[in-house]
Length: 451
Ligand SMILES: NC(=O)c1ccc[n+]([C@@H]2O[C@H](COP(=O)([O-])OP(=O)(O)OC[C@H]3O[C@@H](n4cnc5c(N)ncnc54)[C@H](O)[C@@H]3O)[C@@H](O)[C@H]2O)c1
Image (cartoon, rainbow, N blue to C red; front, side, top):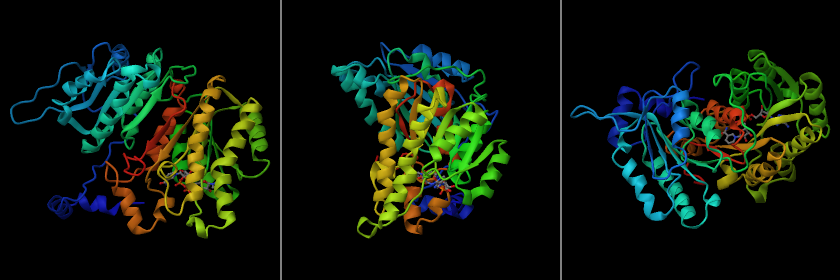
């Protein structure tokens, strides 16, 4: 679906009107294309005293072919130097008075962040330190979320808490957040290493899923089709699943990515057993399971009929739990496995007419939080994305006024694309992301809803 306002705002007349009336002017986001450099320019790197992650940052940036600066660029008189990224290691801040070190690093350079630039703050999980250090580390959240609201022109900011001992395992996360793959992920707080599993650095970061088998539910269209595309691009053999009624579109996707198609209703009583058989016999197991299939049946609670409640809870939550249990119990999900759920900001903020949907999507968050420590013992991770407004058939059906509000009420003043959700899922799925477990990452351009 096209965003006509965004197109208009970039036309000659549109640009003038937008400027005069102070209307939002969405910047076209830079998105990953194979072969592109991770960043379009140098990254300025700084650290608070006692920082733990500085070596990791330098190693990762070097291996991702990103130019590292330890002093800000200077520009000729009248011009402004541009940094493609600012990375600050705040992990050593051990008391609130030292939060001033954030100000000292960022204040002189924050306005030098380029178009679609990246800001990353690294910290220590507050729960792993306690006392005044925990207070100071928790304070980093307020800083990053505010910077997200101040940054312009498609730039993003994230806070990454890296647990002590997990420093080298932060590479896949840093690469993702600094690259154009995270175009619509903004102002997120990500934890690395708190329930970590084994991490295997991919031989080729452009094809991290080589040799892996990935199941994607609801793969015939929308976000699911994009997830299938991106996982296949990253090297996975994709098993694309959807209901029989979507058979033609599903075959189209499977053929396009040289994957296979499975026509199955995931709510069928025998669906878990059928999947165990299919994945076990045809593929010898599965490495990545993406629970993307989802439905809405919107009505305010007083008017909602039982079937609407039951269907949404069955597709969006119960079937996923049954499939997880079967794949784990039968040993079909291999060690090193990845489960990824698709929640929604409705599951965080709630929404009128969506008690059933928001309950199911909050349940997905519950599934992630509950399973993460348990699955870590089996060398499997579980995470979820929580998309905001994504341009799909689902959101095209939303009434115009609500649709426009959804598109503009975020720091990017635009909706995301299915590929933005897919790229985030591909980061979770990477063998390099073994230390990323139990996270729910919003792909919402820092939506005001539930913020
Ligand atoms: N589009 C958005 O803005 C947005 C926002 C937040 C969350 N999400 C979530 O993202 C996911 C994908 O959304 P979308 O916009 O691409 O929706 P969509 O309706 O275009 O696609 C969903 C797919 O799931 C399949 N499906 C439904 N019931 C199924 C069943 N019982 N068994 C197997 N497959 C089934 C459908 O046939 C369809 O192909 C959903 O979980 C949705 O809740 C979407």
